[in-house]
Image (cartoon, rainbow, N blue to C red; front, side, top):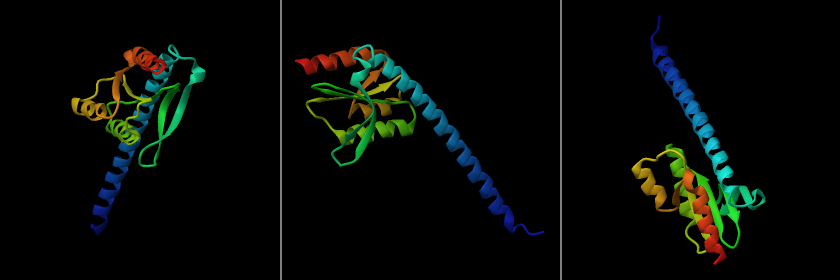
Length: 150
């Protein structure tokens, strides 16, 4: 008999739908990133022994924040590796992480992708890290590790 409840009901359904869509997108993005991380690790293992590859490596940035990177190969020169997918959160996470870490002479920063990023995302991430296609991880890692030996 009273329509006052109708607006609240519509909002409740809309909020539930938005939450379900967010959860589904996050689940897809996480699965996508996990597959990429597995491939990155497989490629890195062809360059260095697995014992030399740190997973979920923590590195303190210039702000004091501790960032988690997917992998690090630690020698005289440190190679920090983080996968990036064409999802906004992944791009933003890579930019924030590598921007805060900054450039150091003994540090190489790789954002590895297996699917093309939008040109504006490439430009953004490319300012703070080397954008490396998955197929070039081996060559890029070898190049960086040779630089550390020189």
